[in-house]
Image (cartoon, rainbow, N blue to C red; front, side):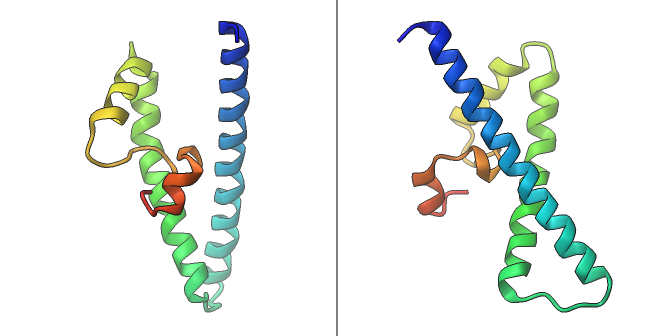
Length: 102
């Protein structure tokens, strides 16, 4: 596999992950709108809200690091060595999500 095809595959995979985060954020918006109108959310909906808010809180610092000079390198090092995960759930592998390592 050439470097170009690996790069293209990585870009497409990450594009899909960004779209997943956008869909999850849209769901968060709908749930928060319902809650603000006085509707009661189910326990599952509350868990979804909590998980998506945590994803948003993870995304902001990761994006800020990425945009800094040499940020992509720094972000890769942080992801590898930090004892906690700074990436949103859509960017975790399926096995890590199943294990609850979000």
